[in-house]
Image (cartoon, rainbow over all chains, first blue to last red; front, top):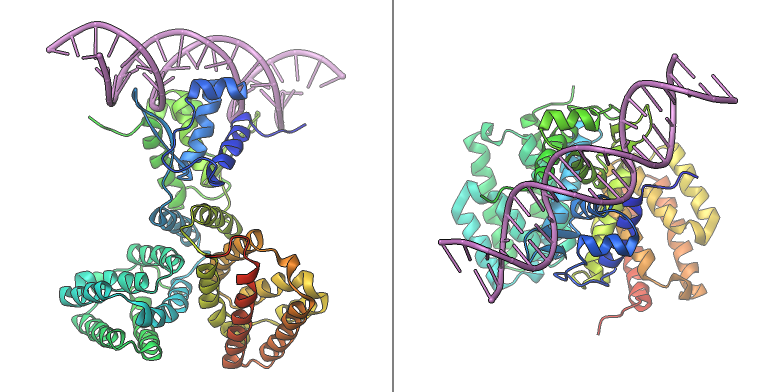
Length: 226
Length: 226
DNA sequence: AATCATTTGTGCGTATGTATG
DNA sequence: ACATACATACGCACAAATGAT
């Protein structure tokens, strides 16, 4: 019999309690000592099981007299970070190219921009105007606000790691002043289209914008394809 | 002084070695004993650090004389499973709706179908024909093959968890025979368009297909919106 | 076939951090 | 300010598994 280690079995059981929602976010799990008795294992085993859940951001542990292990609040930002870390590994092993990342970004962001044109709130419109006013340093933020305005958190969760990977991989500082002027112009046009609620026009303009970005990004790639 | 626990610091350092590719997949890390000396901590600390990486599928540990901790092979399927688990948590806490999942699927799969029409290999075409011939049980497989034919692994990685969530959440058995006949017809039409290499037509047909699917899926939702 | 060396798995004791009286 | 209670963090010893000799 090749049964899995006890710490994995304990983790599996605890994972069920947390991910099913049976234990609400913020709720405290039993202390390590009590979990030892409940599962009939030592504290080492219980602790290693908790570490497995901690790595998946299902629980957080705090030490001290009011401490313990608590069910983590589900946050989309953490999911993006995890996904980004996974993509980093794929990139490091050349299982993923910059072109494929840029393409996936285009697939998601073009229709998302269209949705944003019809769903954006007034405050989101203000945020977009602020990003355009702030210029270069807020260009990524412009795209993030537009994604948020799409009203679909999944799109945000899936795009954010793509931004992260591109940010880490590209030498954006080496881009020319002309490039940044073009980006600024594109963003201003996008803003006007979103203000007008032009769904088709916004998507088309985003398509153009990302296509021209991709051309430059390919040249800024730290490890260009041969 | 509010420094993080030692096991997190050790894990952070080891994570850098693995996710940067400095340690190749399949390579063995130093044994627990050696890691203790290197970081000046006890085995408990080292082991808990390893558990953090194990939960993120960065390493696998094997016991015995030839055992040890090895850098895991990067696999896209694993990333999809992790992402799916994260989405399950969001769904369990009503931070995500079925409509939003269906929308995200449409955003990704419509343009991906267009790409597949121009990039599919002959063997992928055969797989699609086989799926259509197999009928109802292969309908999800049809979509997966089409995504693979898009040539972008990111699109596959991001769509697969959506399928998983929908599969778990919907009562597909309750769908009518008419529904399945319509799905079959849609797939046959998609196959013809892909065979013809009609990029725009394939995307448009996929748009129609997913839109009609969404209407039925909303009614099959286990927990309908109020 | 049996013994052994090496590795991870498990149990338990102690140290340290944290809030409270 | 200090003592104290209780939580997790850490360290060490032994058991079990696995492949080699």
